[in-house]
Length: 353
Ligand SMILES: [Zn+2]
Image 1: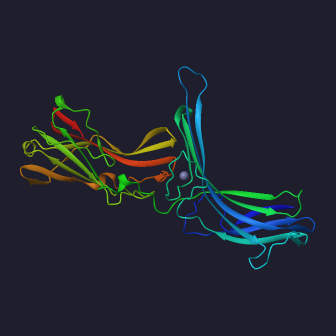
Image 2: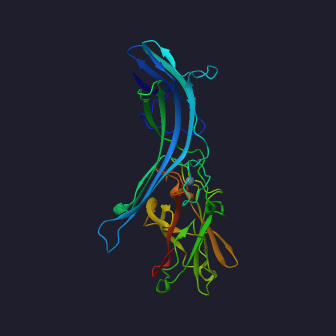
Image 3: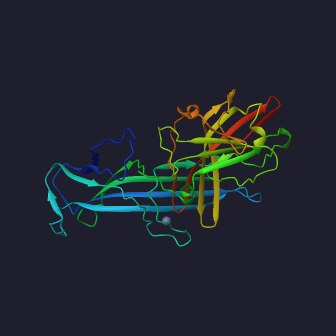
């Protein structure tokens, strides 16, 4: 006796399921001789595993905190039919292969199963299938989903038959944690004087708009905007707009020239288990251009120059192979766009914003 799962849509190409599509298929029960079956249960479930490891100077062996989170579990009886009452003796099926069709769908929200009291539980969008391993074995996280069929048989010594199939899931809309629902722009300002370059001013980032105030000396201000809400779609171009403003004293000759441009996706992964927490970041370049000679010729306002940098510079840049942002009780993954630009005002003066 054997049970197998056969999906209508093969899963070998790892195409992800979403909350819109039903997972359809059949559970095949293969019998070499007639046998009794009590019931057949199909379930779809998700699990989030998170682990943090650290070693102390006084101890050689690392110690860790591990959390195993059940994200949700949906079950349905696919045999016997709903109008047939269950019996102690079960139902005898003849020799051969019996197919039991099913359809089931991913829920939109996660529902923590048996919540642990030391974890702050969040009701969030179901996270995508995900696998993360921090450098130096400092931590790891995994989101897994699978379909399972269980054939229960009558009799104390007859064990259940089980077959499982792991599925890839992708939420339709990314979970938007509060920072991404704020006004979606970032700005950064640098004085146009290489001797006074302030290395403490961060590059323009959508996550932390710089609060740099107006300075008494000349400046170049770079402002980056994304449509609201700030969503980047995989395989599509980046809807980024870049604006430059200069101080009045820089509006005249020699012209301001854009020399370099960089656009990168910064990704941060935070694992929090109880009082332990750690964050890892990584960066991937979308655009990296140097040797530019793009003179800014935009409009003048109050003596200063305002111009928009041509979007042609990043029109071919697309986001690829990025796990969507998500928030769960123990793991948060977020992306931010970081823009860097280098300008020159005269052969001696170059500034990076
Ligand atoms: Zn939870």
